[in-house]
Length: 157
Image 1 (cartoon, helix red, strand yellow):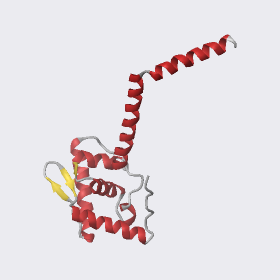
Image 2: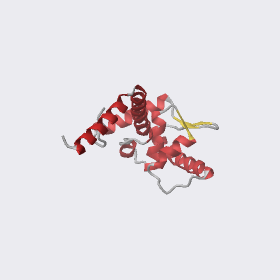
Image 3: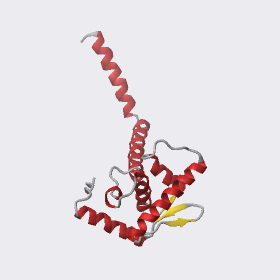
Image 4: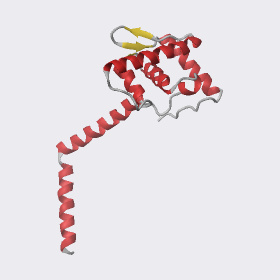
């Protein structure tokens, strides 16, 4: 065996013994768990497929807000702004602009949702949300749109 090969094997043995350390293994497991959690949370905020875009003639910003409210009980202004971030890259981070942008989009969304007898609830000093009844109506709209072939159903993972 050549000297170079022996050096490489020694380095591999050092790396392997490092990875066998229980604390390192725990850290790696925690990193993997956190990466899975980040992926899950990103999927909640930034879905790969937003069915409201296809079924209700909404803008991307309106669909992003509606989907965020559909997936959670109550959404803060900050949460809704993050949901819009994915579709609105030229946005200001100024607090007044964030509040105004969300309010204007909610106002436009309310007008469109009134056609479906769905309303956005205002949680004073917090944000917005949908009632369970309105979420059920939206689910029916999505299912009817999928049955009519207007939207592709997302495959379960």
